Image (cartoon, rainbow, N blue to C red; front, side, top):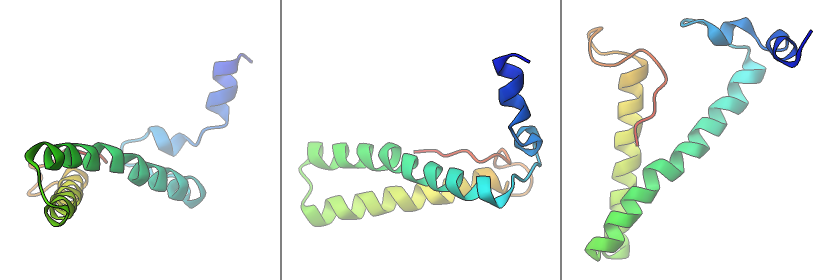
Length: 95
């Protein structure tokens, strides 16, 4: 058995199905990793825009909060398609 087959043998097959649901032991750490990694992609552009435009600290905080809220709404629309047409049905994060 080569390295690829060994790696595939240790993976849960539900990870490769469109409607698969991985076990909770795998789901929680990967979900947390996804959320933490998304902060950099969502917050960084908002901070760059705020510093370029010379926003006050209160305005910078507000634009970061709005970026996080809109990213969350967009992620939910991607995960759970609206009217079966708006969204992909996949866990996609848009920063």
